[in-house]
Amino acid sequence: MSELTVGSRYAKSLIDLAIEQNALEATQQDMAFFVRTLKANPELNAVLRNPIISHDKKLKVLEGVFTDRVSANTLAFFKIMINKGRGEVLFSAAKEFINQYNIKQKIVNAKVVSAAPLSEANKQQIVADVQSIAGAQVNLHAVVDPSLIGGFVLTVGDRQIDTSVATSLKRLQKDFAQKVV
Image 1: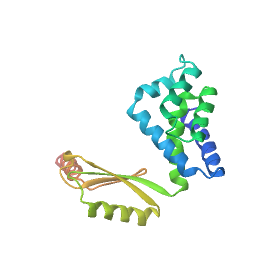
Image 2 (image 1 turned 90 degrees about the vertical axis):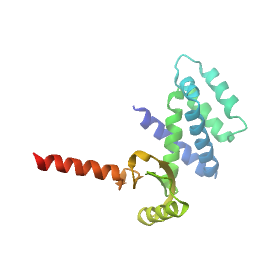
Image 3 (image 1 turned 60 degrees about the horizontal axis):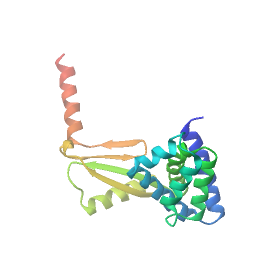
């Protein structure tokens, strides 16, 4: 079974447990913290994925890093995953938990890449437009890429709107090349 499938199943179980114990928000914050920590420290992820390192050592590392920073439920989840030999899918399960949480709470992640920094008014307008189309709360992540020359590229889920000058120039160049031949 793929890592994503296994992680998805554990994430679903954790969401169900968090809802049952009325701790969904706290668990989501714990999982977001865990994902940020592993992204910032790839060595920690390597330890969790390493089959040579014993379960006890993995548990001690997790407890050392996350005790007093996450809830008891989250620590118990980590222990279950490690004891079942699923340390390698812990990161995937946490990311999938966040995805499933976002779906359940109707939250959409959007990314806008622009040639210059966007003003707060521009960001708010993009958020409002995406909210009206998606019917969901929007988390907007803005990035600056001067190579776009002008315009922006908005990505929401698997959809993308590209109004950049660089893309327009590439299309124009391609059209000229085809018509000359």
